[in-house]
Image (cartoon, rainbow, N blue to C red; front, side, top):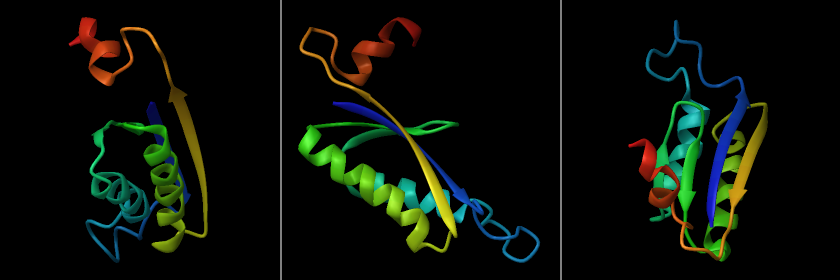
Length: 100
């Protein structure tokens, strides 16, 4: 399974005037969950893509969503896109090979 999650917390982080470098603290908390999962992932400008067994990926997506709240956001919307396939092209590399 390939999944992309875009976590949109409110606020995205701390006031940069008070906490320089923590502007996207709640987004970074979600990314940290994905990174700590050990799954293959790529952080992009508008979301993080993760690849792995569905039974492992689903809970990671939930924990990433919840991490934004746990880190102090007052609300969060997560946009998730999923891909599963049985053909030859089922991995992240397969889907982007012609563009890299």
